[in-house]
Image (cartoon, rainbow, N blue to C red):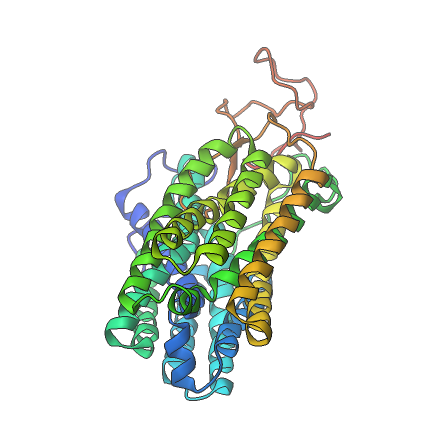
Length: 464
């Protein structure tokens, strides 16, 4: 049955997005929220989960590595295999896969079944995350496309700063298996909601390419991009190496009760939301400098826990600082990358997400290895050292990120949402100028930069 939502036409679509269309974007955002919460939840329930399965905390924490690696492969692969399938149906099916992974996790009785469950979850997560940003702009009027993508992908970071604390509360009240069971139910409900709220979404008629067909340099050939990706790899790995074992840190070093731990993680989440919007505003002016400042913040927070983690007050300060610093990293890092490679925004964003997801898996693996071999205190100092290495890379390796370019970035994104470039408002007949310098008048260059009859892509940047 056709849903009431209408698919906007990129050429002559509606100029206003309806309430039903915004509802469809909201359902998509909830889907990304649930899939990433499913991935991250072991962080908040690590100790009871390990005890219930009869495995070590390091082994339980490695479940994040399994899910992250599978999702990192599935996210770019699944869209290539879909053919002409309706993307709405694919998203709904992927949410059923996520539900199956959560349900298997809830009933797992040993490490082997846990790994199978997390592999299944990773497949569904990669499919949903990989399709969400491509589907979102098709749900709304063209002028709202950037905001739709921001809201849809905003569920990713909101999961880490809000979903994990909420899951921890459910675990404390009803048990860790109930928390994963609840996520399975939510995933099934969202699968049905996606079928009802979204319109039919057939395969796009053509892939998005540069407006002039130019073959600009690969993003990996651009020095600031390479430096930024290495920094992100080190910093996100350090963060998840330590954050995966936040609950044991608060239990063993600070001696907090389960209720107090949930409260501390909620503080982390709330400060993470503040950090997201503050960092977005700052990065709009100085992207690289903002990322470096956030790197210092993450390192200082982890070091604070290592030094003073036996006392509640400094631990609370460290948790709040950690939330602010890491909460702003995703949006600031994406602004840095897209400004460093304005001609290849889609490519650099894909690479960035891949590195980010791989770093999550790597961090969880490194954390489990260090905890098993040396304990919690050594883990904290190791993570702080890796953060320091990320800072050195950013200070010594990166040049100035261009502060101006023909691409206008949307920075008021939800936590963790990708930064979507848009072009300045212009008449439909205006052609992108051949040089990246600012125009001093509205004269259109005599030689068009796009083939006759082809509509320039909104994300396209001028040729070098």
